[in-house]
Amino acid sequence: MCEPTTDNSGTAPCAEHDDVVTQLELDLVARMQRHLVARDLWMTT
Image (cartoon, rainbow, N blue to C red; front, side, top):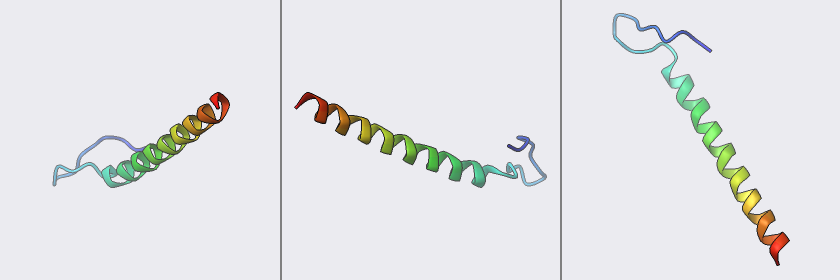
C-alpha cells in the first residue's frame, strides 16, 4: 500500500501499480464466479 499523495505533476506515484492489482483481482473474481457457476450446474444436473 502507498500513500495517495501527488507530486508536482499531479499524478499519484503508484496509480499504475494499483491498476495492475485491480485487474488481477477482477480476473480472479471472474474465474471464481465461473467456477461456482460450473459447480452449480454440475450439482443441479
